[in-house]
Length: 150
Ligand code: THU
Image (cartoon, rainbow, N blue to C red; front, side, top):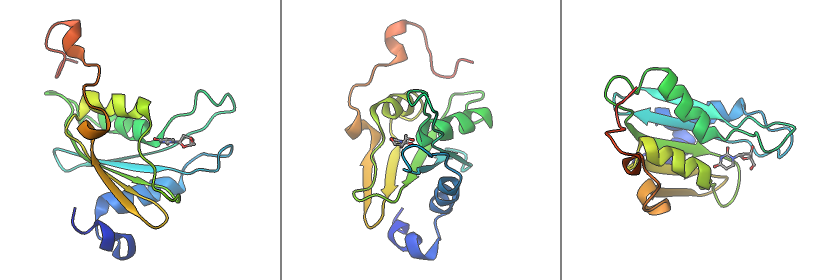
């Protein structure tokens, strides 16, 4: 991920390019805050999402969860469980956005060791998901081997 800074201008990192494109498709007529997300699965495939707002406000879908849903729907989860390696977020804010709490919980289910890069108007921020959400609620407390089950 060393090329992320350069990728902002050179467009070299395909994950950054995909997140930027997804952001252009965001449906955000209420907040006007457009978010693009792209996840890279363990098999190298890329899946994108954007925020989709709703007049009810509360039903708004975040870009990160939309990208996760796209990855699962594309078959990334079958048969041995979803494995996501990287997430790139693109916004136009300063500071860059960090994933909301709901998205952190959803990401933790599928990619506890996820590398997150957030590109804003001027800066780039990076985290490990485990640092953003230590000790998430997990399926282990529900009994059985949840991972990989369909
Ligand atoms: N949003 C995301 O897409 N991801 C986040 O992690 C935080 C917020 C969206 C939801 C809403 O459409 C807009 O940003 C403002 O909250």
